[in-house]
Length: 552
Image (cartoon, rainbow, N blue to C red; front, side):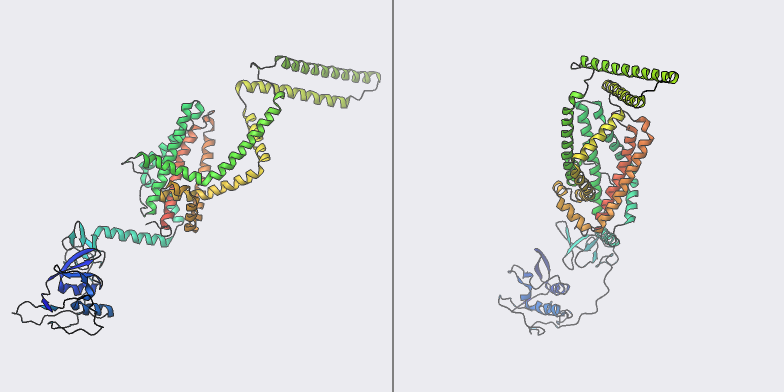
């Protein structure tokens, strides 16, 4: 048996970290739960042993296990005597703790005393050791506050001097607590109409971003009309403008959803271009947009492609069948001049014969009126000849119409008839495809918000294009997804109505090939605003369901 000073420093290994404390403080650590029986301790350079194998710590572990008041050691030495010493048994490997509540007698000069009633819990806003100084750090373990000098510093990490847990800056703790309380209240409240009106108002909180983004999107939308000017360069420019428009729109969507889903519902919807990177700010949003549209509308596009090929094949076969009955365009090398002259002569002869018969009928009628001769049955003949004349005149008019359209282009009436014929051919040839295509189109409208949501909170191309991830997202959202669809439908109707109004107002400015440029420009500005609102709707929905989607 040896003796040792209670103020002698012992080392304690907790959670891979080594701390130092006076031996008399280890009892307090046991009462606070910072020192467990299986933790390793040692004195000086001796080998490490489990704390439960130290005889003088056994009463503290027994009291902690039974929920009793923690004992304290009180020195019984004289005031002028040497510093009190505590006899400590040398721990052995096969030492077994004494069964509670029996305390092994030892020639140590201490007595067990009941601790006084603990004081009130200190205010975490003030230092636990200096009650008049505001807290700078907060302990993650005991929850107490400390001033700047109280926690122990280990390589930039602050450790609580009472329980040994990590301490954090007080402002970080307050901000985290505020965010947690706000998230909890929002989740309990649920997603509803209030969020829709908040989404309508949110873009106006950042007016410069809204104006700048809307103008850029409108210019990119107008750039897609340059294909009407013809040429490969114009076609490439239109494709480039289409890519930029999708990049901007999905950049806004991904940024908004990512910020909202993580609790920052007051963030700017426009991505920050301070640290511009080609991949993060241009290419990645473009691929996200492609993945979202493909996952939602790829089946519909495939059905439409099959139906188009069937219609084109049928139209081509009909054109080949009746090609010989169609007149060649005048002025071309293959124009059949003799055939055209023959047709003209035939028309003239038919009209001359009809006129002669008509004169004969008039003479017969006149003779009958004056001489009493019976009038031949000319009524049926006249009606028949009238129909023949009308048919011949229709052929003449059709020929003139074809010659005129060959010179100046097809009339709107002809285009409408051709489109009607194309639709009729499609309906006649691919009626089952029409039904299947309609179903897939409705599916695309139903699934598209989920694809956009996945693109926003995962920012992953593979996750966005994978329909299983989207379906799982719909399942987790539950009734919230139905509300999202309803709000998206309202925005779609609003966009359609505004487009129709703009088209009617600016119809006099509709240019051949280029279309109605003023209506496109203003419609694109309004469309960018509605897209931003749609992004905010998805962001609010994911924020309210962040616990179900495991979004931290």
